[in-house]
Structures are given as C-alpha cells and as structure tokens.
Image (cartoon, rainbow, N blue to C red; front, side):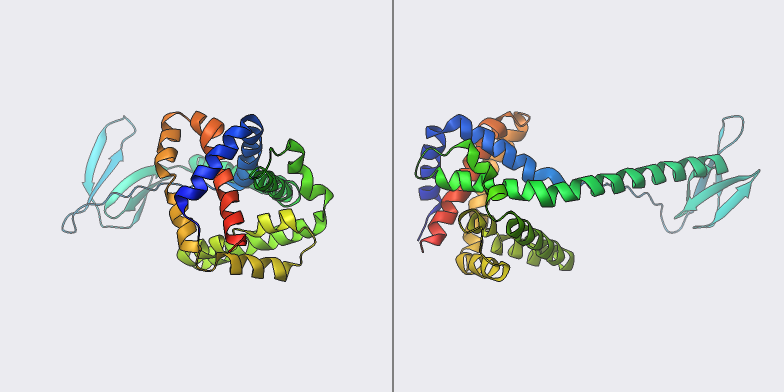
Length: 268
C-alpha cells in the first residue's frame, strides 16, 4: 500500500534530479490540460420588502423621481421601456440600447463558436496526445532522467487509438458531470490513469483501457483525492506568487507525484 509521504518524497527527489526538463514538460502539460477552461458569471439580485413597492426613474432633465408602482410590470413612456423587477425599476432601455445589446451578444456568440471550432479540434488532435506524452515523461523520470522527446510519444505510437480513447475519456467525464457534480468527480478519478496506460500501451483497446483504469483506481479514488488536497497550501502560495511558484516548482512536483501514484497503483 502506498502513502502520500512516500509518493511525495520520491517525487521531490526525481524532480530535482531532472529539474529544468521537468519544468518545461509540466508547463506543456498545464497548457494541454487547461486549453479548454471554462468561465463563470456572477449575477447580483436586489429586492425590497414585500409590503412596499418603489420604482425609480430618470427624467429628461436628469432628475431622479421616486414613484410607487406594482411589482413586475413594464411601463412605456415617450417610447422608452422602464423595466420594473420585484418592485424596483432597474433601468430604462431604448430601442437603440436593445439593438446594441443584441449586436454584442451576437458577436460574442460568433467568437465563442469560432473559438470552439478551432480549440476543440486542437484539444482532440494535439493537446490530448501531448498530455499522454508529458505523463510518459514523468513516469520514465521516476527511474531515470527522462528526455523531452517523450512528449511526442503519442504522435508516433498509436496516434489514432490515443486520440479516440482520450476523446471518449473526456466525453464520458463530461456526461457524468452533466448528470451530477459528485458522480462526475468520482468518474474523473476512475479514468485518471487512462493517459498513463496509453503512455505505456498505445495499442490497448478502449474497453481495456477504461477497465484497467477502473481496476487500478478501485479503493484508491478517495486516497487520490486526499493526495490532491495535500497540495492546497502550495496552491495558495502559488496564487500569492502570481503563478511563478506553479511554473517553476508546484506543477512539475504535482505531475511527478501523480506519475508516482500511477506506478504505485499499477504495482498493487
């Protein structure tokens, strides 16, 4: 049975023995894994007491007028729509404003669509094989000083099979996340070893790769999760250093530790 201390101690030694190549490989791995990041929008909400409804409007002369209105209604005054929500007028929208907002939304949608058309194929055809190669580097680095050429391994060995299996790995994980977050996290850990399996067995079938990763992570998913949590302090320090610590120490350290985890569960 493996322990966190054992894995992290071994990883520190091997990372320091091949420091700069490990830093470069971890940087490429960060780029490959993080190429499809997502963003979140924060929405604010304002409301008044249930027993009072107050609306505010701005007159043409610039003065602010307070008026009592019924909740959730629309007013039309001199060609302008005053939007009232939960008893409060939150603004006035002219036709020109509505058109401008529509144009902005359309432009953003076009940008997102173009980005998806470019980024998604790159993720499937380039970044996923790069992830396999980077993880092969760190597995080999456990026993010897690995070479940078290892990151291209998946392009020269079973490329089509690697692309296919990694695509289904991401698809299955995404579908589980759509179902519920916790099952998605569990499945992400269940499929965690697939890139490492492909790094050593590029000709393996999809069914075998998924089954083998599931078998290896049986009884190890929670321990792997706790192992990831053990880096939380380092992650906070990385934020303080604006990512500098991550590039030159934390990312290669984490990548080497995960490779050590793969070696440990493979030998169980």
